[in-house]
Image (cartoon, rainbow, N blue to C red; front, top):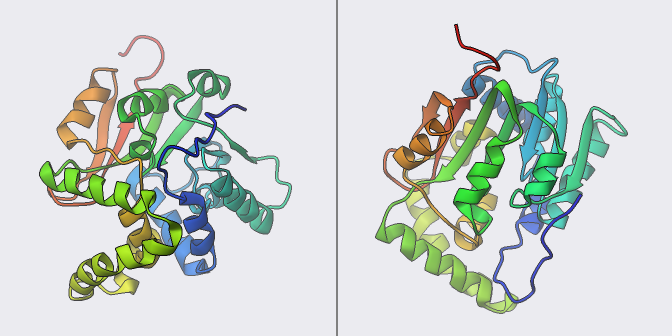
Length: 271
């Protein structure tokens, strides 16, 4: 297993620390919702007998969900603390289970990706746009997909100048001393969450993927590196590589992630 060294000079959000805090809120309901989100987007009632690769596993919630649905899971993340979160979740629910492996790895490392072999399902939700090289990450993510397999990704929507502004906000958060970051985030929290509370409760937010709006907020403010893509660009990128779009869930031109499920063509001639 290899990964790029963490550079102290490069601004980078502490994704793993945020996931560690999220795990303190994990409930059976959140886990069940995560499982349902996988079943819905993949249109599969079970993952039994399938190999599942979780790129950027973060808290480990979706690795756990996939394994509970019957998949053999390999989880990796670039952030060492996120790796520790996923490993702790595995040990909590499936101690020493050889059908779920966890390690540190880098989706931008072509040799590492090649060493993994192939998987029936490759999952990278809200991850590839935080690598610092989105399009190379998108390319590497599809390499482990087995013939006939699925690629399920989510990428931040390109909003033009709004996305450029968010990038500056995220960069600013990460270059500040840690003691000043809450003061920087407070006005943004009041603005974003005040508006959100008028639209959606925490319970309704949770029912989307089992996530926490509070912990996602810190990702929105601090999640750097940060890149975006228009949905038509993502579609064209994978169609050029032979993938067939199966399902998508777009954010309607607003902020947030566009979700895509692609299927790789089967091996051999297509009848």
